[in-house]
Length: 170
Image (tube, rainbow, N blue to C red; front, side):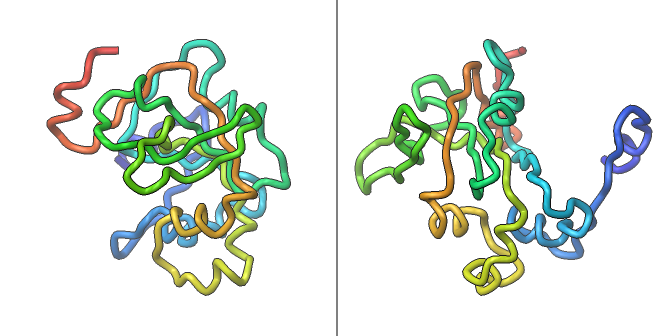
């Protein structure tokens, strides 16, 4: 991957090496000295999306506000591919989120696309979480400061080789 991406001349790519496998928040902490305090896109590696309407990353940028901890791109569960869970969140028309209630389905699943304010890692509540943890802990601690936007296109969860193989051609 490093060899392939190192050949790109049109954008700057900075690699942050992990000596041990880190969860998403741990990976960000490992690389945060490269990004500074400006909001960053964080994209999970096991998803693919198809843009229709407003492109997903553009929609996130258009809806970003500096008072947010994170802005999550969400997909209606009914419009997702390769996802067999009960969803993660419900969302109102203003983008306010609530967690799925136990034993009840939610309307939306988190796509793995987001804008994150790296300044959240300076907050005492986050510093106490350690150096290797999932972003889910931040979402739980700061949900009132996290909003969502709905993806207009299709979203594909490809977390296994089988899912990747069976994914429709796009």
